[in-house]
Image 1 (cartoon, rainbow, N blue to C red):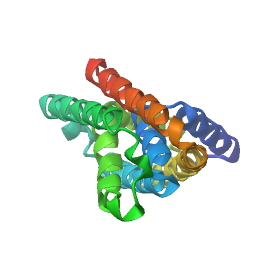
Image 2 (image 1 turned 30 degrees about the vertical axis):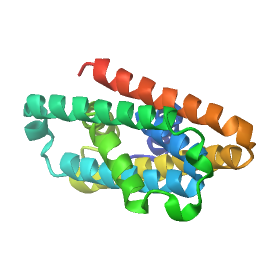
Image 3 (image 1 turned 180 degrees about the horizontal axis):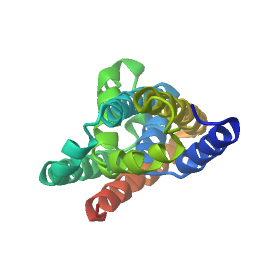
Amino acid sequence: MPEYAAMLSYIAACVAIVVVPGPSVTVIVANSIRHGARAGLLNVLGTQIGLALMIAVLAFGLAAIVGAMGSVFEILRLVGAAYLIWLGIRMWRSGGSSLQPAAAQPAGRSFVLQGFVVIWSNPKALLFFGAFIPQFIDPAGGAVWQTVLLGAIFMGVATVCDSLYAFAAGGAGARLTRARVKLAERIAGSCLIGGGLWLALSRR
């Protein structure tokens, strides 16, 4: 098991990584503004399911296989980018529909799926874990359970930070006047489109 000082350094590094907004945070914030904090938290749930799968892949030695599937992940990245852009365009064209009744809101599972798709649309996240987590593994201990432990810590940090984004954006959206809802939707839509373009233009 990593020493106490190394564990503190790892947690600090996790916080530094997670607080920097990326495509996942963009989706969480945009949905929280438009549909409330619950939607953003469901995005967080989807993201965490995706992260758990990535950690399992890394822990059980499948990262090498995944790394060889470059063309598959290239397609997945482009699909995810197109998905973000599509969501952004929909939000741009919504015309203030954030004020629609709760019964008309999208199903919760759609928000979970969004979070899962977005995290897996960025294959660099899995490759990053493969380079980041091993630096904190004690060679004298079991690599598998240490990977799972460190991955779980990263997921915990990500859950807290992403949930704070959801609550903050949801609270801001709830205080918007009708006249400002459309502007907020266009800002959120622009963020989604920008996140999609960033994902599409990024390179492994």
